[in-house]
Amino acid sequence: MYKNSAASNYTTTSVSTADQGRLILICYDVAIKSCTMAKEFVQQKKHVERSKSLYKAQDAVTELMVALNMNKGGVIAKRLYSLYDYFNWRLSEANIKQDTRMIDEVLLHLKSLREAWVIAIDKVKKEKFDQAAPVQTLSFGLVG
Image 1 (cartoon, helix red, strand yellow):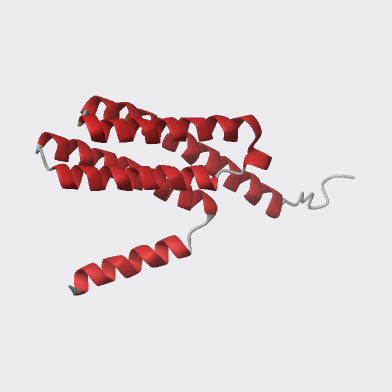
Image 2 (spheres, helix red, strand yellow):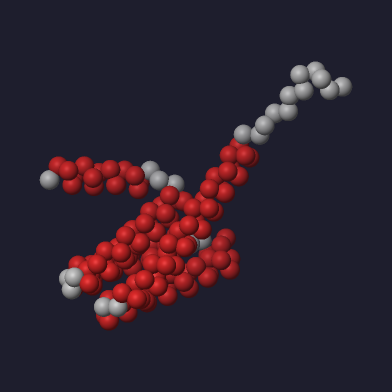
């Protein structure tokens, strides 16, 4: 009992103190883990667990949709929204048809997009760091 409570508290604290980029990665992690578990449950014929895992994956994908800034994101945000909508549809179909190939299709895209987000987040962090801490040029009296 205590172990689950401690883990829950840690997760709650991690999420509530995370920046936007980290929250996006958490959503991807939840979606990927839930899809992976759903595949196992399909093979084990655990229908309730499969459905719960796929619903959780869909919830995570929906969070990704909500996180998009359609005003600032332009074409990329619109395309991501369409992709996320497609993922939710495929996961719904996978749940109805108990088809692991549909889950695999979504998993492949989720993993690829997560990698792209890691790169984008790192780039933004680096740019913010470079802008916040400009390097001073020191001449030590050698010039002029």
